[in-house]
Image (cartoon, rainbow, N blue to C red; front, side, top):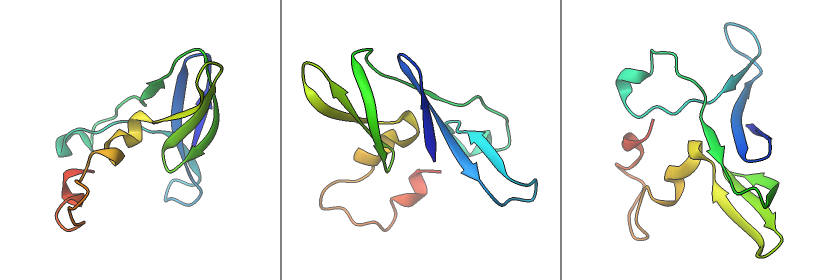
Length: 100
């Protein structure tokens, strides 16, 4: 996975080196329902403040530098569920089915 960055947007892509159609790079869409899986969708865009300078991407979390605040971070739209999909005392069992 990698992102491209312009002045205020990040685009999330996935490189697939081996597939039936050959190597591919896919602009990742956001699917909110099972019925959407067979329909083509545009890739999602993660907006960020213009004063931020993205420096590191790790597990869908982008660390950025801001002049006034130093280092801060945010999840990409494609990974925004990561910090809210389960509670601190919840177990993994049963939670994965809620996300595609």
